[in-house]
Length: 300
Image (cartoon, rainbow, N blue to C red; front, top):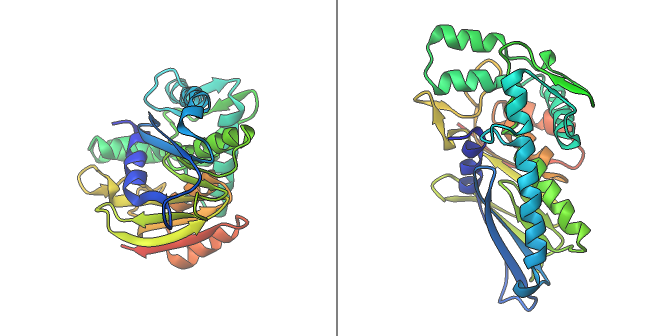
């Protein structure tokens, strides 16, 4: 299973399908479903007939393919895979640098709890590699050892990144921007995280947050807002360890966190981070990001 795939399973389970409320819509709605980032993805375009949407959806599919060539951990020649394999990457894309800059902000705001360098530790635990291997993996975890600029990204020896807790949000934002560029303003994008642009056919988009068993725990309405949900126990690694790890491998303290923000990238990163901290600390972290808010957080 790919690293992004574990997050995609989480997002599908933890965010119920967003549907317009009210009676049958008067406006046409074009629907699209596909497969990207290790799982199903979808979108709804309000005011567009299905027969008129093919050209738009073709552009979306091409853009998703391009973005997977940057962020995918299961495409061996993606930028991220090459970075992890060789320890450095020259001439990184603007998209990858944008995400790494956001990682730096989240790492600083969270006192290091958000740390994409946990990838070696995640793999060691997932593979049940033993105490010595886990200790060696912990030794290479540390965001401060990562350097990046427009010319090169460098990792410490033995280091590797996972962007699982932020890349899907970044992809969601990019697809939303592409649709805005097509003159579309009432759109629902689900690329693992949700971007709700404008209105649904009957008013604000209605978003459900559910546990992995499908139990609805929260509902919100959204206009020009992104929502991300994280559930650490959506997947277990190494037997009983939840798949969201702190830099030291400590267990999460939240069972479910849903965050909304102006961008899906920040909502994604925050929902991941807040699984690792108590309520008071989580509130302080979110306060560092304008107009972000915790929609729901439930302790373990």
